[in-house]
Image (tube, helix red, strand yellow):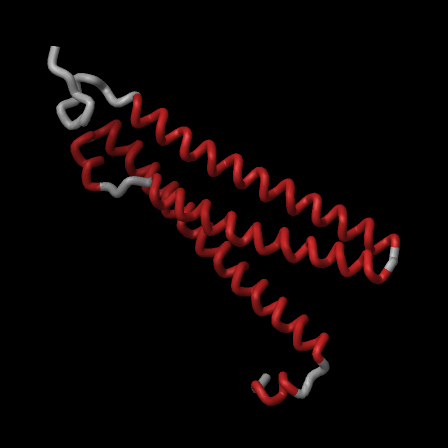
Amino acid sequence: MSEKGIQSLPADVTRQLQVLTRSQWFIMVTVCAILLSYYSVSLMKQKLVCTATDPALCKCLPETLPIQTFSSILILLALTFYVGLSGKTVCQAKQQGNPKQIHTSSLNHTANLLVLIAGMIRFGLLIAQDRAESSLWRRDDPENPAHTKR
């Protein structure tokens, strides 16, 4: 639809179109995050195989943590948008005074909040896992910055 055609629409329809356009954008952000996660898992598989066959080959593979971190941040960004959107829906339902719509939109908002909280927990676990793994480096590994000769 042309810009002129959109401008001729009623204001509430124009706002709804803007919300749908932003929703599409955040769906694309989510798809990109999923593709990054897929790539990260592929790297993990390659690392597992090379660790079992020729550990020297593993040094050529990129680290997965930055990829996983970026993917998680993208997911959290999209989830935050959807929580905000569902919160606005709850407010609109309360203004309209429709009990059934209030109940439905409140349940949806609660579900969105729980998913966002789960995403935040997963992100925290990802960071904690990296810290734990970096502290487990072998002390006799000469590439370990904490290497101490005994």
